[in-house]
Image 1 (spheres, rainbow, N blue to C red):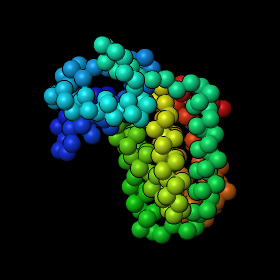
Image 2 (tube, rainbow, N blue to C red):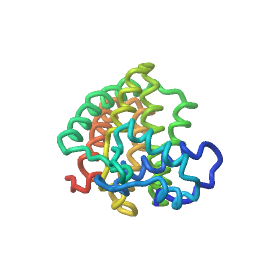
Image 3 (spheres, rainbow, N blue to C red):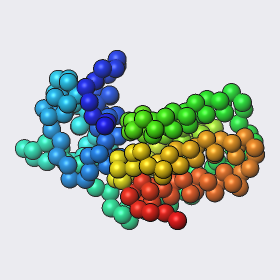
Image 4 (cartoon, one colour):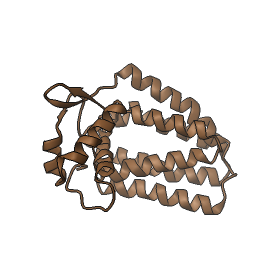
Length: 219
């Protein structure tokens, strides 16, 4: 469960925004769900003010829309839009990781491995917030090694537009465990200098967005 009392230190608004964002992306809050600041404030055990600020930021990001006199409605990303997002990410990320094969230092590989292990742990613990946060950190960290800041920003934006509506229902499944472990396999391929295999794995991994993570079977 992503939504619960806020106990961590830091900005309540940011913590709430991250949690609600994760719940929307993972499908815990499916398209059409109505969200209100007072109701979420009770669930987070905080005042309505940081919740309202978080919802307004999510509205700017396109994850919710204002429903007059009702609150905020979770927006929907159509199947065609999602397919296009996946295709663009495959075009951008798969060739990019190929260029990194055999070129990542041991210290950086260790850092990436820690992030990859956090993805695996988040999935195993059914902690969607940790899973999605670690997954984003890993992918953007890896892309940052290309030295292309525009690539990192573009992929980050595409990830924010993505919906993984079947992800919440995948908790505890073999498919989620397998997709999580792919991050560690990718690092092994990069360390071994196998760029072709790393590129193919990344292309297949991103394809889970319209497959497993959208509740559809894959071959």
